[in-house]
Length: 546
Image (cartoon, rainbow, N blue to C red; front, side, top):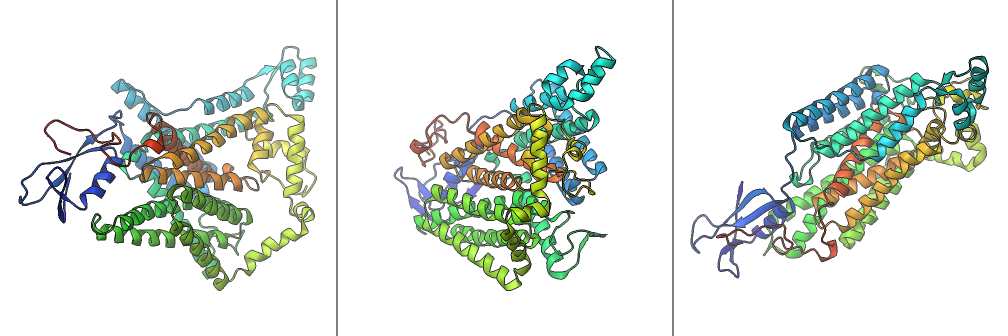
């Protein structure tokens, strides 16, 4: 592949060199390619060319990367459009599809004699804990590990000495929960396997952006026109809110939270190219390139506005708060990296436009839901969340170590339910509490501590990475992770298959960009030169003047 240059200027080596070449030179080298300038006579026609050769990193060949990425994207689309994948048939098909892709890739690599899958060790410990919950153990041992299982285990021990029981109060439900977790883990591994920042494009990221914008536009249409349908299905609940293809408006907001940070990341990426081109001036950078980057910056800002308005129309209080905090947080991170006042000025204008548009449309229904917080603890008690949280804490008190079994909250909670006793409560409306009741303190630490550690690594990688595309993707992963972790305090998005699947994919992309791809980079970021040759990103070859 080669680019034809525009204007020409004499370089110190005496070679005619395009004024747009320098930017192309840097961009191509950032993408991991060797860039060389072919020596030509001063008055030659056509002028100099940029020759792009094989990648510099000499990374191992990624087998079936493109097909796996397409199939994984289709799985995400299918799970999202099918009511968030909450129906047993849908999430069963999703699990089977992910396992099939994973095994096909594994067999394909095995036949080639090289099995290379980015599988970290920490999720396996959590999976082993869940396996332990469904393995029959001596009744006496179970009573020591899980006091909540004392009565049935002790009765069995007296009636049938040497009898075996499980730590989980419903092994079948725990087995189903384990299958879901393994499917999400498979999606994490596949996302980390197929993502490659050197390609400077990702089908997975594009899918998340397009799908998030589709859901946002769908929700806006529902809210503004009163057309409360999910395709041909008439909505029964939440008919006065935007919910997209989701049944629950909170889960709709959670899905938008997972996708809109990548829109903001794309805006940040275009902003960097735009401001860098303006700083260098038309004498060194093609004005058309700068103008295109500027237009893209404003275009992504418009798309971001659509996503934010959709979250507002969902009337999800936790979703709105998580969205606002995430925008501010990742915008400040971007400001620390770019250190340009224009960035924060643009974000401030964007927030003002979003609020102004909301006031013009009418935010009274949204504000009314926030005004309910004036009741304080009493309101939370009446709403039910506080009562659910107190019951969950009671469950944790009786089963602190390993919990009642993954996926068993709905069966164990009735013994602790003190409010809305005529209703069947299936979730605690707090992912952290619910997972602690099911897997104990050991499980919650095994699951969430590595996620928070990965989040810290992504932040550090973003601030130290000297490239443009990869840190922009990392910024999107940071925003998605922060938003969902915040929203999980007051809801159960991690128990919605489509949202949990996207969250696993986002973590996989973040793991690849912030950990695996950075592992071989030993030079400190602050000392790394921006010049492709000086930084070592471009190889010099004999007989070629660079």
